[in-house]
Image 1 (cartoon, rainbow, N blue to C red):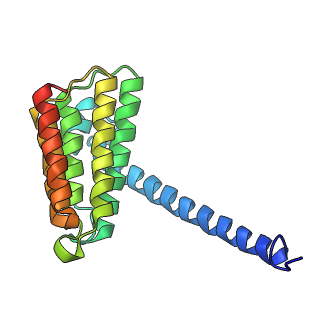
Image 2 (cartoon, one colour; image 1 turned 120 degrees about the vertical axis):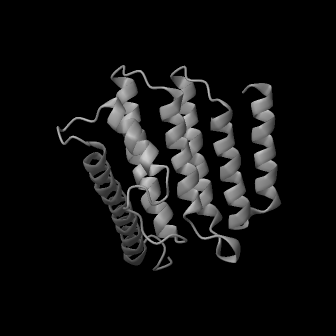
Image 3 (spheres, rainbow, N blue to C red; image 1 turned 90 degrees about the vertical axis):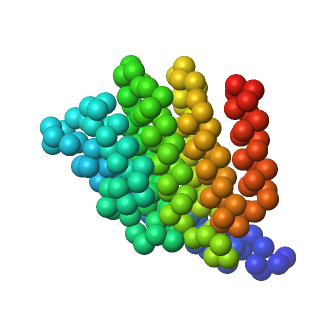
Length: 195
């Protein structure tokens, strides 16, 4: 019998791996909790403990500028994208709660959040130092927001699709090159079909 297979050492290694994964997940959840709290502090403009639709739209429009909320790390870093995505996640959470509560949300609000995804992707490294994974994460965020819009009867418009094209342009600059251009062309084709 192999002393490593099924033995104490294997159990210890498996236990260490599980603990490492739990720590990683806890760290991500903590970062999201902190970003959510910062988002709520900024979004609650009048400090009454309630974020109105107007306050939500205002904070989404402010955050569409990469330095708009003044809470992001150095531009050109993976950390800047991660911080921006945490704000996007908090915005999506608020948006989801609003929809679940029956608050009517407009396409303008959805597009503001999608624009924020473009700006978040733009904060990352580009050129030879590009990080395609950062951009892909922002594309996934934008697509999730548009799926949420469609699921709630909100039809994307040219601005929505333009944001996706801009995301793929950022991906091209982050090292994806022609593959990103092809994706942008697919978005344009989908827009033409009215999808």
